[in-house]
Length: 247
Image (cartoon, rainbow, N blue to C red; front, side, top):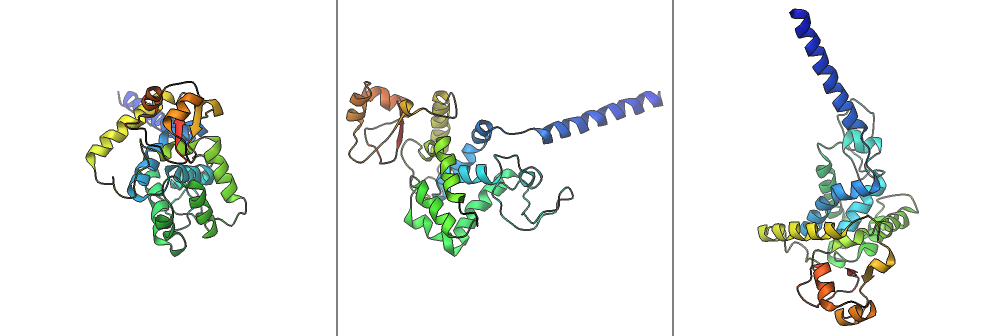
């Protein structure tokens, strides 16, 4: 009887170890990383004004889309240095209790550093290139190609589509609104319904240029204003330069 109990205990322990190991060994793909972390990036954009595309792309680049040793063992997705209590790896990088903490600390770092604090007043949520250039100039990375690689990540995976929640948000304006959270969930679900793959081909979207109107775009792509409004969750015909429309 005692041996049976011991055997069961060993089996449960082995199953636990196997589960932990399997979870730890799980790897993100580019698309699964984006799908998993886009909501925290958008929430931080709403709260602070940093484009979701910038947050996602920097994390994607710095953490090898969640698969680096620092990301796995320290939940550090932004290459921020600091103290950690890990007994698994020896590292000069900061340890976090969760991935969300790492994301929030990245934005907090931009806010508290004098070299990047000014970006919050100079640029809005639709100007990801200038945000990245400003972060690069601040010395965030010493690699010369850092900014071009981060921008290339945004363009390759069309991450700038996450910078738009119906209309570009105003810094801090939506931070404490429960109604906006409900609206955001509805819009994200609608976006996901159209998001059958991570990549878009040029024929599937249109980036608004100065002077563009919804009527002209509809005529150009042989569709209607109502179809464009429905596909992009628009409540009016007002457009913003840089806005990406699903066709």
